[in-house]
Amino acid sequence: MDGKAVLIDAIPRDDVQKIRVIDRFITDRGALYSEFIACSEDFESEIAREVAKQCFTYVELEEEDGNLHKASGLAGKVRKLDFCGAASSTAAGETLKACEALLDNDARQVFEANQDARGE
Image 1 (cartoon, rainbow, N blue to C red):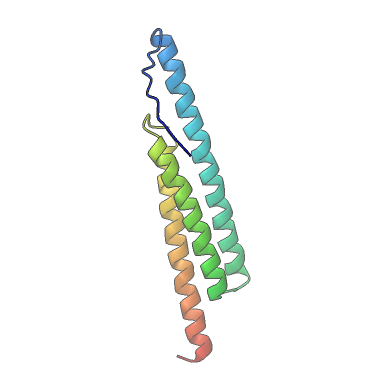
Image 2: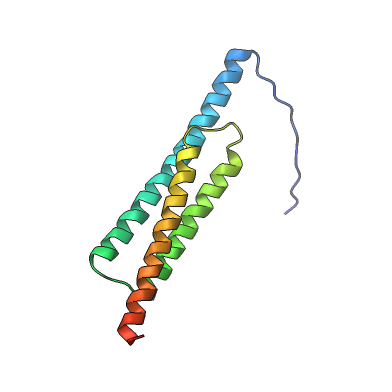
C-alpha cells in the first residue's frame, strides 16, 4: 500500500458550529465510555456468579483476567481519543479501578481455595 497523509485545517464558521462539533465529540466519547461501563458490569456479574457457585478455578480466573484486559484496553483507547473531557470519563476510571480490585479479590479466593484443596 502506498499510504499518504493529507492535512487540512478546518475552522468552524462561528461559535455555534464550534460548540456543536465539540458537543458531538463529547457525546460520542460518552457513548464509548458507557459501552465500557456496561462491559464492566457484565464482568462484575460474572465474578459474582462464580463466587456464588464457589467456582474458584485458575481457568475461570484466567478468563476473567482476559476479560478485564480487553475492557481496560477499550477504556485506554477511549481515554486517548477523549481530549475534550467527556463527563463519564471519571466514572469509567472509577469503574476500572473497582473491577481491578474485584479481580484481585477473586484471585486471592482462587489461590486460597486451591491451597486448601492441596492441604497447604
